[in-house]
Length: 499
Image (tube, rainbow, N blue to C red; front, side, top):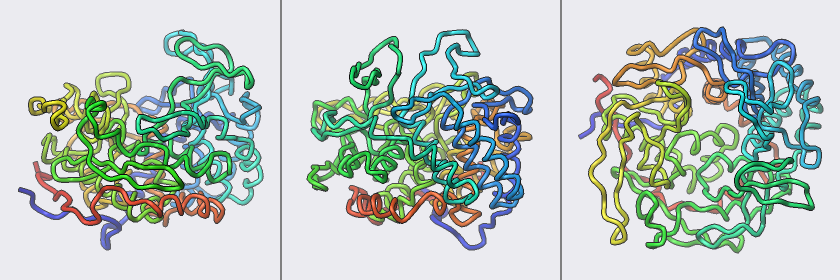
């Protein structure tokens, strides 16, 4: 079976020197992506740091600010430089066209001018300006970090963030398949969009037809922010589904969940979970690391919810390792949406770990996993895995829960492939064909900076993000719940790391 036990958490002797070197190079890419006049970071840049994209998003802008805080605390830049860089970004942010009634920002801006993008620079197609709940969530998270970490800029950041009303996205009538009500929408347009939308004449906007109804997804950061600000009712945290229901009506989901029902704040919560290769966990939608662990960069979920996230985050990391090393036998692990080594962008993940039956694959060929659904749907043939695509930022997100394993994995990716350039790890690697996506995405680089900062600089993002009022509003929600994940379960051991 497996050779040596997976070690979780912070470990004596692990050392932070490799992490500081990775952070130094990663920060170089973010510097190269940032327009010196506006302080806005581009969405992506070529591997040689010479050609940056002509668009950026609220998430990208936020990521550049929290990365500057990390760079300062790691000694990569001076406090004066960090303040100057973030101040320039905030000054531009305060002038950007946005939706006044909600305080929300559009999804795409030109980083060179700050103009809203209405024509996509890569193909000339028309863009109907959109305002995303999750992207604005990451921007607001970054503003909270600036408020907590940069006293000189606290008032400037707070003015922008305090105008952002996440209650604008909240729909108390939205119902999940489990029967719970009260969800946030994907976003809205303030001009008529093509495709599906729901017009709100009173607000003069067109909302998305979709709502976020899954718990283990990155939009929960927006829900946390809305609850903490009193804009969204606390019960909304429990309205999202841990899994879809366990009956045959939902047998199209990846596998049959098992669990129990508990009631929190009057909301009946089906505490369902999946089991993959002996590991029990609450799944995300696509089975990727980003959905599961990005909010944990800011909210101390595992600490505040020891019986919920404190069980699920280690299990998620363990299952990703098990998939990469032992099931698919790629010899590497870490799967999350990122660049496609063969061109474009793709949603990578572990299919077995996501509720979507056509979930995110871990390899170019697909590697379809189908466990069946009890008597409702027979299992499919065993998955065949081909050219696995690992995404370094996913391994960095795992650092708090498998530090030795993550460092070893990253070191081997760097050593065994042409996967490391002037801006740190390139965005993705197809390990069997040794094909590398030689570009940098500012979001992925910012996740790397955030993960390193929390490990090497004493939870810098969490310390800056969390205030006493935020903790009072959110911590009891996480603390009250017990996921259907064992407090102690056999986690995978490291295998084949020398292959």
